[in-house]
Amino acid sequence: MIKEYPMTYGEFEKRVMELFVEQADSPSEKRKRKTLVREEAGVIKSEYDYACYCYDYQEERGPAAKNVFTDEGLLYQPVRILDMLY
Image (cartoon, rainbow, N blue to C red; front, side, top):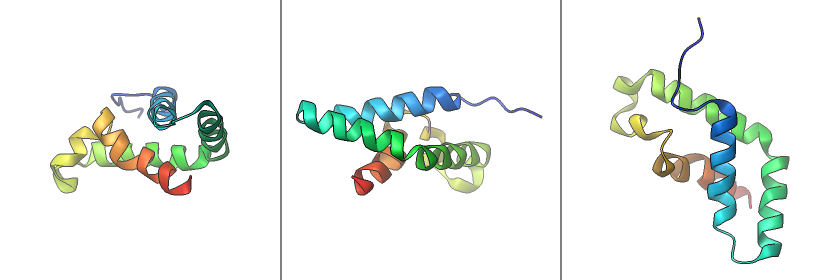
């Protein structure tokens, strides 16, 4: 059974990349951030899987689980993880 989520993996990956790269202060930093995103594709996939899990189990995961596919949720989890790797 295929479940419906607010974002496909492609949409999730694109938005995480946009939010992460937007934080850059210079063109060279933007390039470095884009490179990191490509290198860390596995991290983004894991974060998407985690977001889907949270979305599926909102009752157990609490109120924040409703926001995992919003910009706020993306900044809080996958973008923050990429920032730590950067």
